[in-house]
Length: 466
Length: 117
Image 1 (cartoon, rainbow over the protein chains, first blue to last red):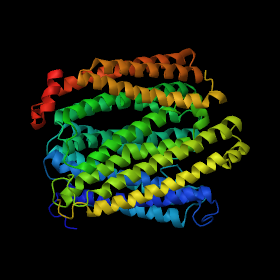
Image 2: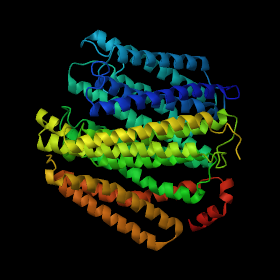
Image 3: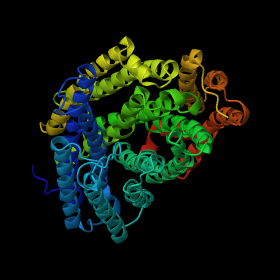
Image 4: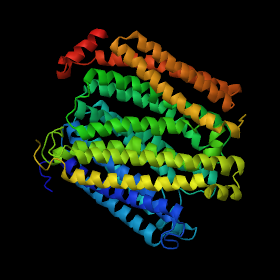
């Protein structure tokens, strides 16, 4: 593929997007394997156990989204700063460093898998913290890459021009790299360990990533709907204020049951319950803007994925989060398939959708075109079907997991009193098993959607538009 | 003091929790639509949606035993969901007033909208 017509940042972005898609495929493959292991527990037993497939499923998700965000920032960097990227060579080194580290970590997860609970394991095999299992050496590598990424962005904006979007973005990147450090030290006290570990998970996901997505959404709306810069910038500030106002202390909903002081029940309960209010109120803004612009865009797939992002964020984070966020009910749902149900919809709705939208914004430029209209020679069936199948698949998995989680919180937690007896009674209950079967079916639907998405990204706009 | 949800109230808690958000979104949607289209009857529907939200919040509060200081959460949700769309609407109007004239402002629909604001 010839990329000479793209600027340096965009050429680097294409590399990030490519690895993001490869890791997205890995996430789905290992997700399907993990799902099958619920139905056929002996599957690959002793070869690729559930703990390994699940680890790769989740880590691949976190990392492909990180690649997607980084690619998106590199894509908009030169255009937004109105100057050439600073430190492109270093950026390229950072890309290869990160990609090499990810490859080695995945190979270690697959081939070595686990080790004794000592420093060697922590440094070279698996650090043991869910979602961020990467060993310590890779952690250090990730932080170095994030600092390079920060340098590229901050130095480029300093050389060029600053904007509201770039200001928020650069400050957010400081937090993105800084907060990761909270998950890198070791303490033998599991409560203290989990306390800091949640800083990475929650504050990344419900603070820094959300702000990053806010910046991308603001830029994406300017590109696809030609929304005025002043408006998107003002709303970005409002959104960040609302998000931090409830989101930072919403962290407390992870502190309910890990041995932290009791006041976290109140703090977590209150702030988590108030978190959806800004999300709901933003419906007003969406209606206002839709009325003002009549949704006239120049890139139909990107616009469709941005709309999917708005709905996915609302349902995944808002509805599914709020249903089990109060400690009075979370006592029964915490760590069951309820969490998995919420996680599937929220991660897909809030993050996967916007990265896909950003890739669709990039694709016509990569092919030397202006946009993707409704006059595609094949009617655009591939992007429409992939959009439909991916959303159907994820929503289907979410509902299936919800049914299993409901049964689990009922039988394992409330009736069984969180005992081993309760756990196994819940795991073999027909509602749980049927939920897992349906999850598998919708997982396959998601996989088909992903295949179509990749096919579309590789081919859309290659034929002349009608 | 935390009083966990009773077994018989599980579904009520999940359902009313979902209804709080759904009715809140419906209220916001109808509220904005009514203002945008200058149709007062839509505002009646908006406040009916808020009525559903009100009932859902109280049901959730009762089933989840939101007593004592937890009652303040119920109040915060009722007031927050009621006022937030008003605040966001005011911000929408204010932010769009600072907008420089652009190509899209020439659209007939945009002119119609600005005249209503």
